[in-house]
Length: 114
Length: 114
Image (cartoon, rainbow over all chains, first blue to last red):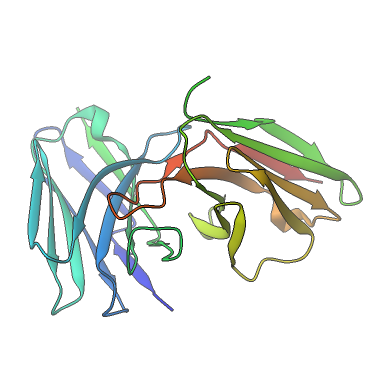
């Protein structure tokens, strides 16, 4: 089955700096890669996703890049703000329906210091 | 009520008790999930139901028994649990279509097994 590794497990940055979280996956058939953000005491929520037919996707201050050859993808957050502090989870699956299960990485706790 | 709601939010039970967790989604989705969140495995898939049929049972011990009576409700029946089963149990739903695989999570049920 799929195995997703996520690094780093914790990341501390100064407000305004950029943050990068990296994930690798093992199943070359995976083609859907979402990122979820979980604030303290709250539910995980989808913030951005990418499919294998594109190499990069941006949404305001966040971007995700995908390298299918190397089987890794990354989340980039620019101009970090204190409200970006949360645990971020990457995930991978062969598709985006219930028959193709998402495998999550171990999570990255991002702390943005004001 | 909107989104995905879970009850109870907190539950303390002894190892010989029988209890149930309830999840209800008000999004019109046709797939529902149980995830276990703990420090050891941050987001671990337990069960998936698509169109009220179980499509995944991720090697979960039989002391956890899911039930999906209709597309809006999902239960997790608990009996003779172990202390290591203490965790946050998250319910999620999605629309099983090619458009998006976004998971909508509930707030979770925090379970403590004494």
